[in-house]
Image 1 (cartoon, rainbow, N blue to C red):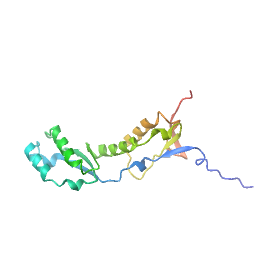
Image 2: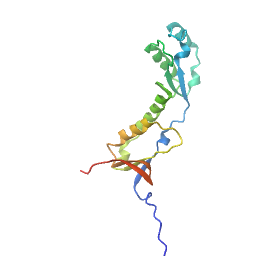
Image 3: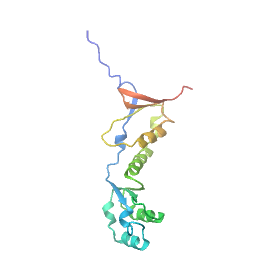
Image 4: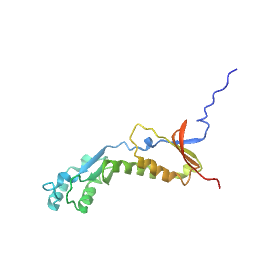
Length: 170
């Protein structure tokens, strides 16, 4: 006598979210202001403004740019603002900070486009494995967004999950 094999994962009602699907495919670029410093120490406004006028900003078209200065130098805040004004018309996004900060911003923007209501009262599994690097900050942000609406939140794969949150019974 044969017994029917039942796929309990398929019939569990779990909703799976894979943060890998939120990965922005555009190129990541770090713009380091150290190359614009006078003697590696400070930024000179006249020289910097001349550079901004002459530089080919179209090379950043569609790219994701993090701006920083890796030298311990005197860089006024307005310099980052001016740089952003020149990058913004071309780049997909511009952030101040490291490539890690940039990656987090890209994921946060993608998570912000989620309609949490589509997960109202759902049992949600957030996939843990991906082929692209997903920052821990993205998992934290997704948890923050989903907790108010989900019935339960789990981490891992539908066949093997770690329970994270279960709404208390009213």
